[in-house]
Length: 193
Image (cartoon, rainbow, N blue to C red; front, side, top):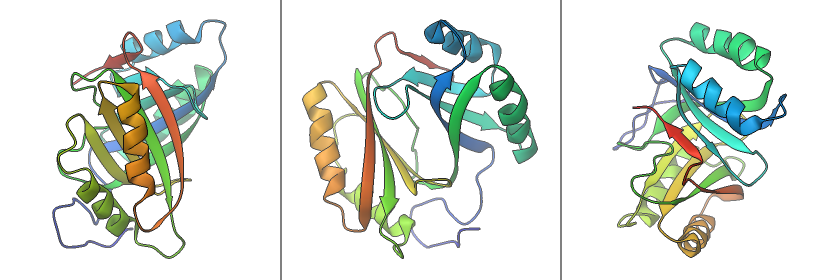
């Protein structure tokens, strides 16, 4: 369990509802785009799904009431549907963070961040938040479990603005590595509130 810290960040215990991020690497189907649509419409736990270019071809945000429900979703619904993926759960997020959220922007970057060994990922998250004060489009961030420490989502009206955002993130102290995926969300996202 991550210890609580002072400040404007929700931390100290796993969030309820349980929010999980799904990095979909492969779908066992000849029509992955349709499978993503079917999966979204048939499963109310899936709040967002979008196609990306990067080390995963699609990303989903899932919310469940309990970890047992999430485990069943992973082992039964996702696995039996041919979804091959990796998962992260949220352990802390910046207030009002929505991951991802188009917010009227067309382009989106997802950055999976590994903190320097021994660095506090919550402190790194706060430094990233500071760098994005005044960002004109969508910005969301969370400390997560799994292979990476932090997930950042940035929206922009132009692809070049995403490159500016990635450079901004990479200059933050305490980051060992980043992995970025991009999307044009026009007709490539499904969102449920």
